[in-house]
Image (cartoon, rainbow, N blue to C red; front, side):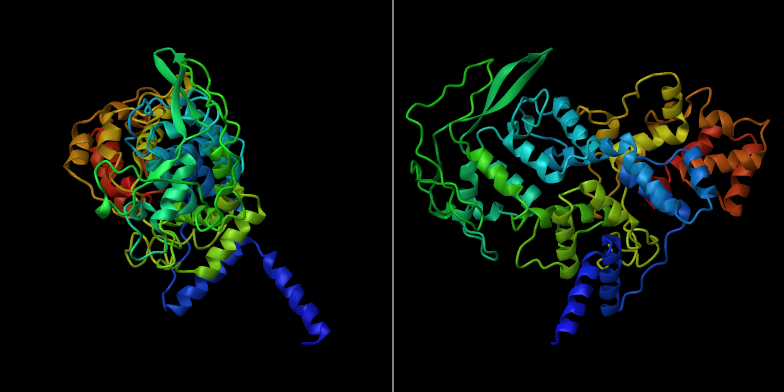
Length: 528
């Protein structure tokens, strides 16, 4: 290669690296679709895009006014401007915090008052409000400093005296690696061994949940770390012998080096009730947190790039997102590498990353296509049911209930949202219909709630509600029906739909019943 050609190659490489990530996404996805002979769906229409992006970014549907403003906007960059507005909307932080609370705790976390985690949820929401880099707040969470009333300390409370359980969860969430099989034996199909598992668990073996006070009727916890103590390894579960204690295992980073730590202190610090536990002279937990959230960690950046991709595109490039292993290859390896590089180069800025994903044509494709809820080659948009939190908020927005509350200065009524976790009917009946990966299965419980639950009370919200407008016979029937559709389904009705509802309303059909039909239809239940 000549000097001139070498310079040209380096210039082109620099230009390629400077290419916006959204363009890299579309290029790599198109290459794979061409190779697999898969036809891409057309771009989503404005109504479809508006409803999808609003649900995905702020966890609810657009209001009637927001819908009309966007649909009537004729500017060419209105989608990018909408994305920017939603990313700056306070609801974005709350919606992302809700989703991460589910990732970290699930619907029904174990005991020790973990359902009373309002302080943790506030801490998590603040991280998104301030756009704290993901590696920084992941490190904060894993260090577990502070108390359950005001920080991330509540996270480890659900794994009291169970470092093995904590190791399984942390490895899956933050590294995208499933180590649970190696808990009992060397993994038969992967490269993880029992020694790998217990070497990681050893970082967490000295943690203890300490009661440090009260806040009202709630107990406040902190996470203490002792300066001594090791996890014991007894070998494969099939060879376990009753009474056998096993041998101590020292901390070792996954497929890395053993932890270098000083000799244990001669005197162990004591944990005193109602007092914050002292930090040990050397913290294994700090070393663990620093390694997990390091940009040089071979798993960390790739795991979050893949997880957030799956959140917005329906499935990971490695799927499931928490099973990244040599035997589970990515569908688009070059793209996953590019996403990982972008995450590191932009210092784990999740808002930047999400902005690039949702500005891509790949994300903005129509949902029309093969019928797969999670298309393998991303040839069309995924189809997913609304989460319980999204559904409850969407009902409030559509009926005008949320606007009436806001105008009156009232706090939102209890709709089943979980800040803190509550056991309302919405959460009970709609809380676990899906995992976001296409395995939706509706049931009789949903049907009974929609027919007999308090939904009609929300529809009959009074003055200023959607019901009042739709039922107002002094207004033109076309405008009433348009508002009905724009408020509930974020689109204008077809001529056939308009004629059907016009007949129903002019013949004396109750406006509340017309609203109920759209709030309970499949189009409303799914992100369409």
